Amino acid sequence: MKKFINKIDDILVESLSGFAGAHHDLVKLSLDPNFLTRQQKAIKKVAIISGGGSGHEPLHAGYIGYGMLDAACPGHVFTSPTPDQMLAAAEEVHADKGILFIVKNYAGDVMNFEMAAEMLPFESATVLTSDDCAVINSTYTTGRRGVAGTVIVEKCVGSLAETGATLQACKALGDKVNGLTASMGIALTSCTVPAAGRPTFDIEDNEIEMGVGIHGEPGRKREVMREADAIVQEVVSAILDALKPSPNSEALLLINGFGATPLMELYIIYNTAAKLFNHHGINITRSLVGNYTTALDMAGASITLCLLDDEIKQHWDSPVHTAALRWGV
Image (cartoon, rainbow, N blue to C red; front, side, top):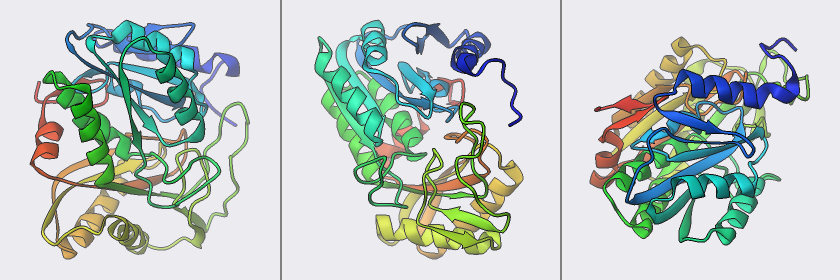
């Protein structure tokens, strides 16, 4: 294992400290328990909090700021954060209109965020993201996993919260966006968790994992490597089966890298996916290509399609200013 680390036990704090230092104008870091918040606390709005295991950067800390999150709670690598982190973050950012947790559908995340919600002294609600259409059930989830579509949910809900909307309205929008979003990932290689020191799974040079999870969980099947067009066609078919979009639907297409895939290849995936969706009557009017929900050093990518209506478009297009996403400001 070759990685730019010092002591394995210090990876999280050193990385969080580097992130907070590099983006000191946007975020501030609290340690013991670990959480990050906006540098300038928002007032009179629903406070949006997310979190999960580290190793998926820029998710979630990279989305703290105007138009997205108020706080993020990072666990250790691929490990859920603990309830005391959520409670401390909520107490720091609560702005008199309640707390909305955005939680990826993994058993540990769901359990710990539920525990925190039960202990909060003020009103809260939860949006559970479950956009991964690769699997129905796994040992990590009940139902579909929350993956790159989480970014779209955080962006849209964060935008609505900035308008002073109610907690119930923010949850309703988050649930709607999640229900209109489907993703699927493909791994070319495994990732290596630093504490383990070896790849999470073994895969031959001529193999790919179709439907892989963002922690290296098994996908739908192991296949022989093919040309990009054939791989993308299989993923697009799975997404269309999951969403069953109406003809002439409008959509946002997100091509997400897992951490070790060049942008050149991500744009090849976008090129093919956009053509295939257009062929099926889907009009791609919004797009995003890059590393937004990663899996450490995994080579691979995911494709996410979010069906759009006027409300979702409004909140996707609205100004955002975070370390990883910024436009309109």
